[in-house]
Length: 378
Image (cartoon, rainbow, N blue to C red; front, top):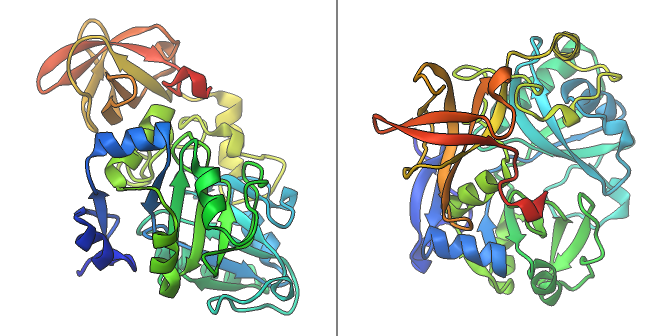
């Protein structure tokens, strides 16, 4: 099957980017170097093309109910322009995907970008599944909508939109220079429509790096105009990965996977996304999980011995008995130390506990550590 391409794929190729397959997409992994791009985000500003992320619009009289019953957080808490992080779980409470849910303004309150389908009444939402999950989640939403006989439109707009992330301590100033409307007054997880280089964008103060920043959703036809208007180091998926690992942020399909590594939100340490006083698919199973406790949990690991931990490496106790597996790992560009995420039994999860990671057949000493690994980000 041919890989899907972001709107600026050829533009990035001309810039000298190298590419990788990710979630069925052909995406830039680096433009200059992963380390240089990583440091630009930590110290200055970088821009990522994250158009591989999905965008699904849900609107109509029962849109809020549909969103409430298919995500673990409480969407009724969202006012217009608010957003929240949530899990999408199956009947057993297993995480299928994680997402950010945005509450959009009513259709008559904003200028149409040409990709929205106005509804006559009811709330409007946009949620962002991970790469390669948009078709699956569109089917899930429409299937449950029909099963529950709800009045809501569900539109997969992934191919209509581009999505950029402008991240770093200078992100606000850089985006302010490119914006026709003020956006720097947005608070964390707030969003609104604004004009960037004359293009209407949905601008949210969200991100996946641990730094201040914004994510922009806009018509794919206008992608190059906006990209070129933002003066920032172009960054690929390589530095996006090292940045999020330093923060302990989950990666769908790697730190959890419903087939290969099924986990519930309590195991994955994102219990803050679960509101058990709401009704959603998987709620009853998660109530049991909370009451009984979990047997394994996601932890951070910092290697003491030399070596780089990678996805799939065994975690052992000090007697070399396998107790878990690394789900994500890297040599931290900020710390110049090897760090990782992985699941271990709860009795090994206390910070400071000594374990070992098997790196290319060699046992390396490591310690359990709270995330984020960057202590100034806690």
